[in-house]
Amino acid sequence: MSITIKGDTFTTFDDLWETSNLTQAEKDEIQLKIALVGKLIEAREQKGITQKRLAEMSGLKQPAIARLERMQTTPQIDTLFKVLKPLGYTLAIVPDGQAQTVD
Image (tube, rainbow, N blue to C red; front, side, top):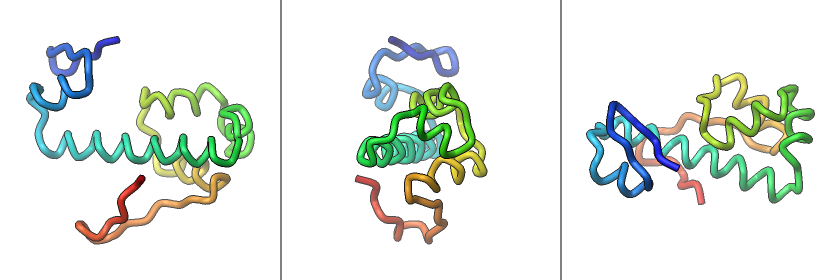
């Protein structure tokens, strides 16, 4: 699979990261999305919840959960709250440099 961003086509994440014309702000945004979605998937799987069940619990549809997990969409904040709540998580704003890492 490949992705085209601003006219450049990339086949691996490293290819995108190292050779793209992404600004640091764009890279930071990508890292945030990867961390957020990764934690969401991890929490869902640890609780043994399917995408369908999470959709029911959050009031969304399963395809919306799938698109979110594949990073094919950028969710609104209210959608994030709906999805994170049944998983036992919330969002927080912390001072830069003091954020906990997402493992």
